[in-house]
Image (cartoon, rainbow, N blue to C red):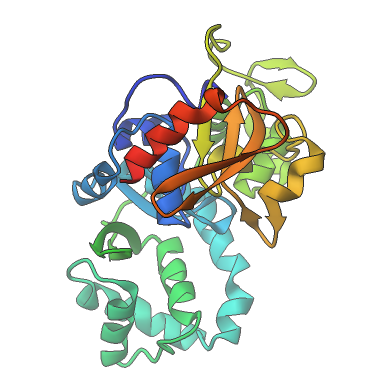
Length: 316
């Protein structure tokens, strides 16, 4: 856990450089994920997007991740085609036929001349005769398809809670699962190929090949870097869907199975968690401006009180 949550403050770009993508399906949870890894100010996320340092796109497991802008194309080379193939049936169900998709691809450079919210982007595409149903799930699946092709990405918000879509400059990069595996192990290790496959969504055969050459530490697990330092307990209040909670095939080492459903509620929901030295010891929620921690069993408040106050200050 210490490799994911080092002490001290860091920039959005610095955190993105260490982490192989911050889960960003929920923008608020992504900001909390960055805070847990050293970000001091929530507004810094928007500034990093505006500066073009970071972007978001659909990558590991087909979900949205925040990452360094320079790393997007190499990762799209690994995940783009896979994610497009995985969504083909749902696109057909939503009326996103090959003809509709072709018209969208052709019109996009003329339409997306400035950052646009998704609804505005779809409206402009339809003005060019693309024919996308503007309500329901079709707009989301269309933008994910265009992102998988490497044509657009998500950037700074164009209005509160409205991420803007912008063109992705042309470029070619080779995807390298082995390079991604090395970065994954540096952040999540000790971990094994099965963990990497669960986190990334890549087949286990690809994961095993990607791990070839990494230093094994025993029990089929691999690690890089130094062991965690001794000292005070490392306490973090993690947001929903945090990387740490999604990074392993088996969560039993971090989460007592008696409490598993209080964090992983089913249906893909992963709730905010109190984590102490790698163990999930409770959940938390916001009540107005307050952070309310709900520990599992007897966990002294003095252990997490300072962290709760820090989260309240971060969230404003």
